[in-house]
Amino acid sequence: AQKVTQAQTEISVVEKEDVTLDCVYETRDTTYYLFWYKQPPSGELVFLIRRNSFDEQNEISGRYSWNFQKSTSSFNFTITASQVVDSAVYFCALSEPYGNNRLAFGKGNQVVVIP
Amino acid sequence: DGGITQSPKYLFRKEGQNVTLSCEQNLNHDAMYWYRQDPGQGLRLIYYSQIVNDFQKGDIAEGYSVSREKKESFPLTVTSAQKNPTAFYLCASSMNRYNEKLFFGSGTQLSVL
Figure 1 (tube, rainbow over the protein chains, first blue to last red):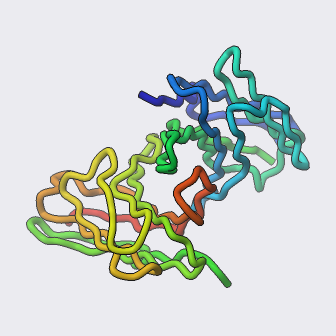
Figure 2 (figure 1 turned 90 degrees about the vertical axis):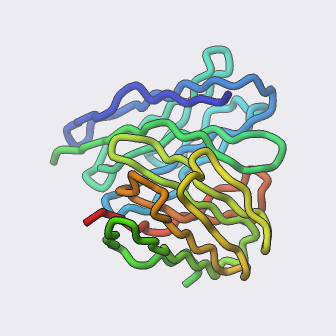
């Protein structure tokens, strides 16, 4: 069975500090996709990134960066120079293969950025 | 603007009552999903539909029902058989079923009176 673990439940940082969110996954499949979503206080989840299991390159998008390490089954997310607008719940998710697009979500990380 | 519209934002259910949550999308997406979110928990899949007139049970389908008569619409009914319905319900869609990113609505908070 597919499983995603996000160990830290709530993380508080002072504005401009960096914050890293850990995501560890379990799967028996060799082909899979990993995602990160952001859930601001308004409630809707917003897509941040998708990574397939064959692409281990790290990615940077503005202040966001992702580190994918297949050897440790981790797909960690770092916010650099955090801002108050980054306050949200962040979910890591793993998709089943074979085209069903069913996602296994972690429990999420509540990030609180203190001005 | 293209997107997913969920209504109502807040809904209250009496004991023994069925209630229906609305989800409409104008993104021309084939696939649609219903997730349930409980405080401090991740999202759990209730039902999903990959194409019109077809849907499959997710991980926690008991006590829920859906229909997909139109591509744009995927309503969720919470039946009286669902004994613990209080939760935040999120509808989502994706272009197709092939590991595409999901687009989410703003959710419906369901509470029991």
